[in-house]
Amino acid sequence: MEAKYIKLISTHVYRKFPEMKGIKPKVRLQSTGGSKYLLTFQTVVELALGRSMPRWVRVVASDDGEILKITTSK
Image (cartoon, rainbow, N blue to C red; front, side, top):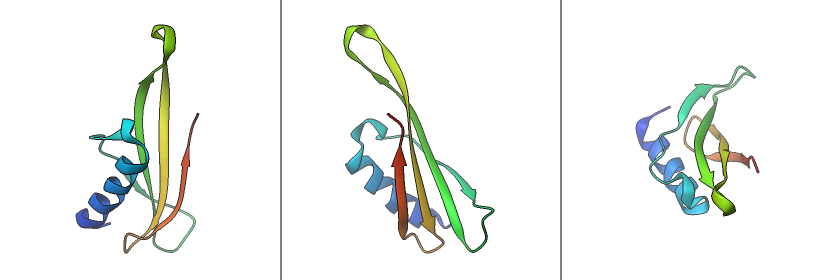
């Protein structure tokens, strides 16, 4: 996947999930065939009472940067 598409997808994720701002995604080609990529963003979110929780955002995108699906952990 080209760097310009990764940057566009990252900008979309940063707007939708501000806690992910500045996180660089891991990019992998999906083995399901075609030219789909999986971008994974990971961070730790601070909760009330000093607790923390890991948070992931997964983006499935086409080779030309079109976002097909976004999922997140809670």
